[in-house]
Image: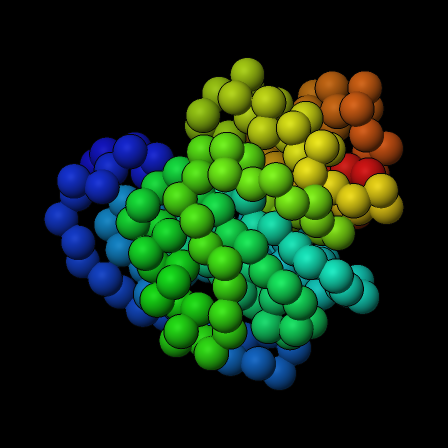
Length: 192
């Protein structure tokens, strides 16, 4: 199997699953070559569950959106302006399909991080691409600060065994870091 960042040559085999949050039912199309094809992965589920405890207003960015569950679910429930980016063309194609499927309009772009973005956001959400390596991952997280509004917040999920604790320590140079939740080895981290 190809790596999900650069796998657009994989044969397409779309599958669909449903997931419910806050009384809404969402339907997502996924495909070969995107992260967590068969179901909503637990890290993303826990991230969304914690975001939904907040009162989200303004505009949001789903950074590394994959097929779009974070931005579509959070954006639709709070009815906020939603931008979604991913480096994977197939992921953005799926995000656009899922936006229509769930009757919620988003701005979805193929972009390597903030390459095509100059806007500032009230919130940035991400299940970040750990496998890009520490240097690229940290670049994405640090550059996010320039795309947050003055009182903006970034909320991410990182597995403990993939370096969540060291990431939190390292990000303290750039952000006020807070552990929001921890379950089954997944850390939900706030960066302000």
